[in-house]
Image (cartoon, rainbow, N blue to C red; front, top):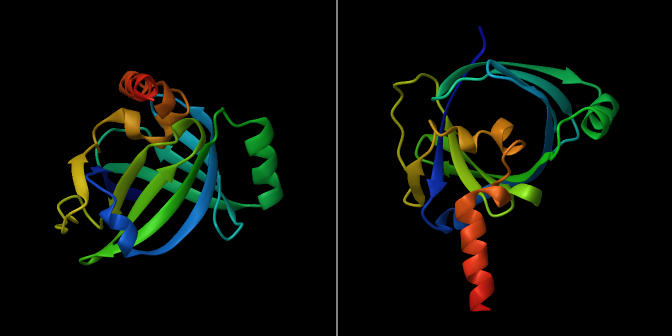
Length: 170
């Protein structure tokens, strides 16, 4: 069985930006987002397209299967079949300790959200936390990409309140 083991964190500050060694754009959409599975189509930074099937479970471990598909098919699926809004983000790669951290900076309806993820070989694997990492949100479903299409970051009550406060200050 294919398995993904990943921990997700919010960020304390922008210190990670000085450590980025690569970054690229990702566009992805979900065909279904049910209680037990999400099915995603993604076009990666090299123009390759993938179909991804992932078990819908909270926590750090879930089943994951990924298959290459023709790019033209992926573009058509994203345009005509995928749930909206699409996930649009820049992924920044940062080495820290023995691991590569993926820092996702979202755009569009999820602009303002930045999360860091680290993939592990097993659930008990030790890893060093970078100084710019803050609270872990691996168990919070709001931060799953598949949930961000149904409840975009721009609609979160705390984000709406913060933007209203900022507008009143201006």
